[in-house]
Length: 360
Image (cartoon, rainbow, N blue to C red):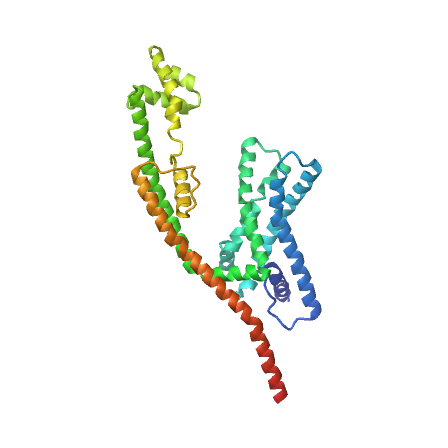
């Protein structure tokens, strides 16, 4: 009896939580009405919880009253607990949604949901609200900064919102188009990521070497040998965070003239790196914006080899971007045509039924 009761509850919750049609057509009208009401309320709650992140960003300035900020704080606390509830409900109804039989072990279905795209998105939506802990307990500055980083995950709330919007035909068609071409798009994405990493490593290596050459030439023009030990000590002092103390401990007092020379040329020496790719993160960013044919101009290729690589990267990008664009556009048009044909098919079915009834 208990199992039947739970099964009935899960069957009722599944179309509400997963935003799908109720497949049982023999329901009573009252049941269908209740289902629609609960579904509508749940959708509204998801929309509200997803949009709170925009309001929280908008109220960071000093122009808003304390009362409004308190209201947003209450909403943020609500969204945290709502997304926990959302995750639990999805977890509990996953077997019913996927029509998994009792022979399949619970841990297997649980594993599938936890690592499914929707499971990950909802979990990250919960993490994006973790900063509300600061409203309940006092945190030190380091912990506060760490929890503030979770706000960056607010993007995943919009992904959750997009799933809800699939109740509207245009969004449903877009999702259907992506689902049909999922394999091809996944391969293109993997290829793109691989190319970004390869180009990033090559660009980073070449730009660092070229920058080093330019800096060495600059130092020689100022009468400083780049390989001399005192210059290395001076650079270590700059990076130590306490330049004066470091120089006092590692530099002879008789070399004060050299320190004065280094102090004079260092600002120009340091400014040479402007526009260069000096870290792997910069290299990834530069390779990505080049591969997507955007290019903001904040980073530029300097070495001759890098210029050739960037040119090749841009040419490869034209081919790579054209593939998914064409696939998505074609699939989207097919989905639109199928959607427009549905009403006609239903009308023809109804007409055929009427004819059969008349003939009988």
